[in-house]
Length: 316
Image 1 (cartoon, helix red, strand yellow):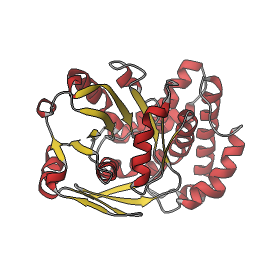
Image 2 (tube, one colour):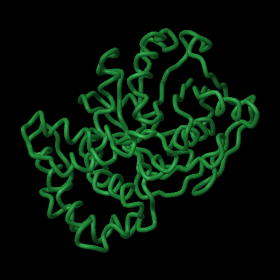
Image 3 (tube, one colour):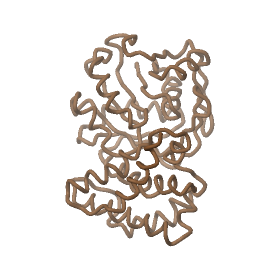
């Protein structure tokens, strides 16, 4: 099996090491500095579960699509920031001859609707999504640390394609030590993650606090309640579903377990703002706003949060 991983952050390096441990042939597309680090050091996965280390001669790395060999890859993993999806999907389309005829694209990203840029160029039977709530941290450009694990990685299709074609990938990631499963209901699990991320990520970044602090005063709690309520209204108006009957049921779990279990965590949005790089807000609250407008749902709290993050980003 030959896999190209586009996006060499914590998730990308972690998946690369996982798949390489199961004898997949791995290539990584990375920016110049990261590509250089991998060429010099190889890749490593450490932290929770088994650690793996592979030398520079065991992983191919590219920073130019024109250098990638033709008719090579069975799978393309997308693990970049979502802000790169328009460019990546276009470049993949321009260089689609690197993929075998039956190749599949699997998107390992935050947010919802990340398959849409790729569906402009590729058939629905080619593009799949995943729900990843395993925590990966990249402290060095070639090392991924597994920091948090709560539930399996789930892979499936938002376009109702049969996920059985992804079973070999799920089995290999699981064999590497990180549980991974296929599902016919990836939309439900992606919305579960959206509820969590949209309520916590931007507000924690704006207020410069961890997740737990957001639950310790009535003001931030009210904001999060409104965000969650608006998302449920959008889901109910759309063709999508999630795992809870209503927002009250979800909020019981959110405040009693989900936030306490990740009390000390600072969001990826918070980390991006600290590093002065563009956030993934368009794939989070921005997607809620897009669907709210489509279905004529009031999502004003999500819009205020979105606008605040965009205001901060404006100086980057």
